[in-house]
Image (cartoon, rainbow, N blue to C red; front, side, top):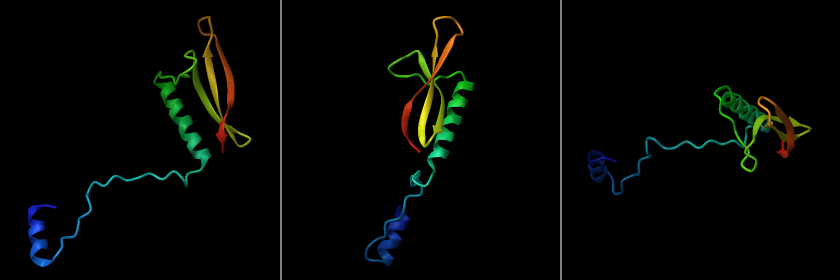
Length: 101
């Protein structure tokens, strides 16, 4: 509230009303978004990162990176790709489900 507004409120009312801030942060509510949609969004982000040459590596096993996220039989799975010992050789494995859809 600027000085002009304060003066106006002092003259016209006993207690000034607090004005809402103009740049109030908006909260995003993901409770209404289906799990399938969230998983598809994550997969799109993984694809974009792969296109840019960025990999999402496993924290415990640095040679594995996330390749794909899928929903199978109501559970969410992520597919890891591991770089082999020889150049270009890769192994792909499905890791246990990380949640339910």
